[in-house]
Length: 437
Image (tube, rainbow, N blue to C red):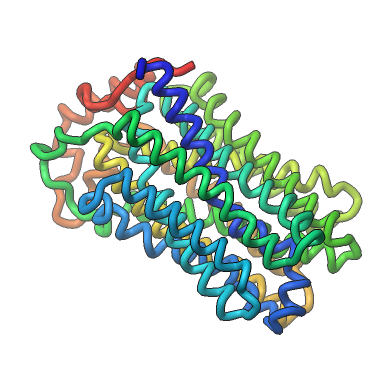
C-alpha cells in the first residue's frame, strides 16, 4: 500500500473507531425518563449509567500500557471494540438496572483501552500533522456522541428502548471488521527503537502529568455532566424528549466542528506549540455558555449549545495535542496520554454523579451549572502554566529525577525547537512522516 493510500485508510478507520466511543453515553440521556420508569432507578442511580463508563475509562487507562506490551496495540484496540460490541448488544435483553450498569462498565472498559492506545499510535504515524490527525479523531468522537443522541430515540420509538441502546453494537462491529482488515493490509509501526531507550521514571511522581490530568478531567467533567443531564434539564423546563435530544445532538455537532477546526487553527496561526491562547478561547466560550444556561436557557438554546459545544470540543482536542506535545518520544507520549486520561476520566466521572445528587436534593440543576462555571475559571488560570518552554523541563522535574535546569544543553535545544516552531513528534526519525491529503 502506497503512503498516501495507507494514510487515507488509517484516517478512515480511526474515524470509524472514534464514532463508537461516545454513543454508549449519549444514547442514555434522551431515554432517561423511559429508563427511570422501566427500571425504577433514582436520578442518583441513573447517573451511574454515564458516570460508571467514565470511571472505567479512567481506571482502565492506567493498565493500557501493560496491555500494549503484552499483546500489542492492534490486539488491544480489537479487544476494546469487542467489549463495546458485547456491551451494546447485551442491552437488547437488559430489562433491569443491574444489567444496564454492568453493560456500562464493560463498554467503558473497552473505550478506555482504545482511547489509551490510539493517540500513541497517531503520535508515531502522523507526527508531521499531529494537530490535524488528532482533531479528526476528536471530531469523530464528538460526532459519534451526536449520532447517539439523535438516532437512539428514533430507534426506540419504533422498536423499544432496549433496541435503541443495543443498536450501537452494529457500527462497533463494522469498526472492528475494518480494523482487522487494516491490520492485515498495513501493520502498526514497530517501536523497536524503544528497546535501547533510557528507562522512563514513573509518571505518578511527575507534577506536570498530574496537572495535565486534572485539566483534562475538568474539561470532560463539563461534557459528562451535559451529556447526562442537559436533556433532563430542558425536559424539566417543558421541552419534549425529541427536542431535548436534538439539542444534545446539536451540542455534539458543534463539538465535532470545533474539535477539528480549533487544533488546525492553533497549528496554522499559533506560535509554535503554544496552545494556551486557543485553550483560553475554548474555555471562555464554555463559561459564556454556562452563563446563558443559567439565566436564559429557553430564549436562545441554540446559542447555548453552540458556545458549550464549540468550547468543549476544541478544548478536548487541544488538551490531547498539548499532552502529546510534552514528549517527543512516541513511547513516552503514549504513556503520558494514557496517564492523563486515567486521571482525567476518573475526575470527569464524579461530575455527573454530583449533579445527580444535587438534583435529588435541590430539585434542579442550577447549582451544578454554577459549579461547572467555577471550575472553568480555575482552568483559565491553570492554563497559564502550559508554556511550550516548560515541556521538557516539566517532564524531568519529579521526585528522584534530575531537574532539567541542570541540563542546559538539552534545554537550549528545546527552546530553539520552540522558537523555530518545530513540528511535534521529532523523535530522531522513528516517526513515520508520510504525506497526508
